Length: 502
Image (cartoon, rainbow, N blue to C red; front, side, top):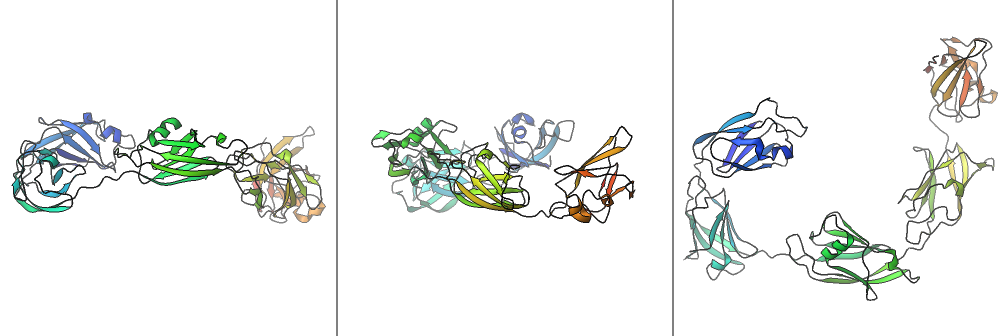
């Protein structure tokens, strides 16, 4: 805790050195005040660094008090107060400042509201004179506000007029009496704005989106039927009601209304609707004016079409893009043919990622450097629409560029043979070149390896499998030159050391 400051006779602010937990700090049981003043509420500030305590009775003027804060009060990290015991802090309350008038205005219902700088004594009724006429009744005091009932205001107070006023005798909670106030005020009743529909349109095949001019009253987490009732929504097609299947909103002002697919019936690809909103209310229960509009929905019966195809080097995948969202799908490889343009031979060592809902592309992985013709059979993918139309057969071209990333050694496994010789198997990060055709950078060239900083023993043999491993002997360190290279000619960084253990 940092300090305690009395704001007025009924409010005390406790300031902390760090943000406090809102739940913990809002418990009145975590605070107690000496004397007879009970704490009725504890309100945490937005930044969590202060708590305003509201008291049931006013503090006595010119007197000291002790505020006790429970050691169980926690900060946002879940830690309790640093002290092992309750914290007790003293403060002195002295108020010798008279209340002042902050504003005078008309309320929406026509009452006159006089706002003061601090809470007033409800036992003392201020004297109010308007245009020379004293208000004899209908005055009430609550907190910082004095209210004069519209029914007891002097005649002549019409909307939009300016009047003279004299106010006196108001007292704060410790008996400080206000100075005589003389001034003018404008009696303008604020107009309660009725909620209204600002836009309604079709935003999908069977989807409508409506936006109101302000948030409206609705039942949160309710089903479509309840929300339709809250909005006073009716949808009709040729005079027959169409019940929404889903209604969602994120802000209470814009609602997305999903209708059943059966709105398109009888082979029709359009649906002419009448949409009406009636009896909806805003959060202050102001009733909106009825709104009605004709809307035509259109079913999407077009198939997904190829937009482009390219190779994404960052993700190491060929990306085939379509012009619309696709239906979720898996097992697409059997419908896709990949031909190596150099050899004319089919490629089978590729994979196709599953398509998720709303994806607009199909991603193909496992393609080595080269140029490829990729063919999608008819209906390989389908549009994520009501009709779920499949694609027409097409062929596109993708070029996989040469890799610019040097190969690395991932693992080295050693085995002892029956003749007591040792074999080490190296696994590279990608396919590497071997044999005489690879030249000095061949993975099967013994000169590319050192054993404990020495050349490999005579009789060492190095062989490669069909993918990316070479076999040699014991601990291997690549020499600085020459270097093992991958299929694109990128060479292993010299001095890379791999230790094999057994």
